[in-house]
Image 1: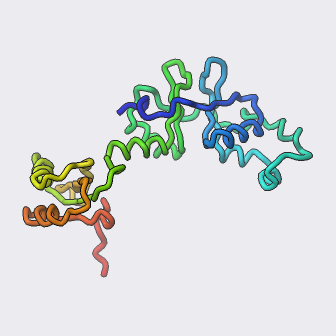
Image 2: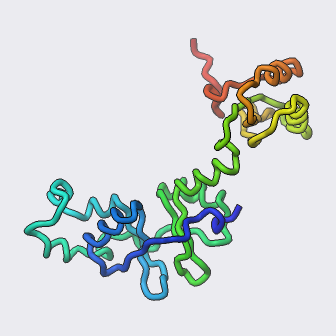
Image 3: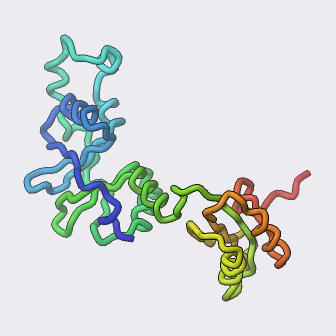
Length: 225
């Protein structure tokens, strides 16, 4: 799935010569946490976050909730003085997988989306990705997660899916994850039912090791008493 299908298209931006007060007002008004900084033709040159704004503003004004006395001082603090220059970005043709890895690598909460000319076309936040994955995984509907361990062999996933399908249960999604044993994989099926007793018994009878999703981890479990 491409970023262009998941991003927020209505982007609130700000210019580098705007004041810190203007930045805070935009964040508060639109209930957002990130402001791409642009110049002419919406060319991206930086980004500011709510944390940047809090750090740039004297604490006395944050506590009082309004400006008084030092208004002129705050007017001298410009966005260009505390923005992040040349922030990490994604393009319209990048995938949400690309974006997820970049968010993790850069440890940021949102990525501006730009075209080939560097113009802002959208913004992709962690919240946007969460909404997308909820839709993709089908977990917006009532259901139950079932986990099993399978051997790393061709056809194992089909056997699990077939066994569940025979019980006339619909799938929300199926995920295959790494297992600490390199010769095995963990399969997690989100089933659109709250009654999975028969499915679990059937999978166990077929010889599959059932996993409690709440206890599962990629790392090998400790053998300590």
